[in-house]
Image (cartoon, rainbow, N blue to C red):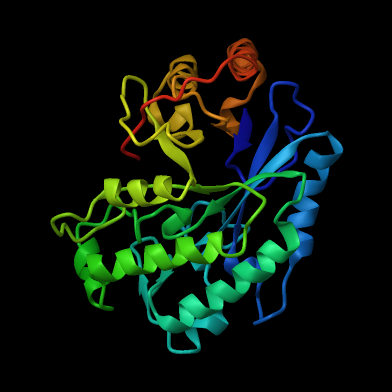
Length: 304
């Protein structure tokens, strides 16, 4: 089980039921000026986990909701110097600024960043996986705000499902072209916001699985059955939210996550408490036992 959310803290590094940490950064943090990289921020966040003999999952997103990580300025995930090259943006209801991802300048700059990112961390024994970040929060959709005018907002800067699909494929290729040793995980969401026939989450899931890419289910929900091709490549299972927000029962959430036979389960840090110690310990023991035994791929499916 890996800790997730709440900023890149080291608070749980010595917790015996936590095997590692999902560390989330924003592109603007790590490349504040073109070609100038702040790998020290990644290394510092990794250090306590590495010292405890644990591993990390790395994610670098170009956009996020304003409330997700105010310390990292998640509302401004794309560097300002990228916009200065003529890349357009939209501003969401919460003030978050999201980029014109498919702009050639954005794609070129992102590819250069990924090349440097991989040169630094690909094959690092302390990195368990790297998330392929496409849209908001790294998931496969441009925007996940609950905005009734979401589509018109994006159409104002030229969004189409066809353009998004081309960009998604190019971004996946950018990652697979530079990461050759560390596993890559795609985080499917509904992916397309335009409603065009044939453009749905299954399209990107099929594409990723055909390339042998791991899938990360960022919305584990008790009682949901996921369908193939999920389970044909390794799965990372992430709780859909902290139980204090979703109203879920932690034991049920963890049971649903383990039913996906994942390589890792991402648990919200606010649920990793002394009060939940027994539930977490039992789930960690079941996960360890399952990984020690024969693996039977599960059918999984649609995302969050």
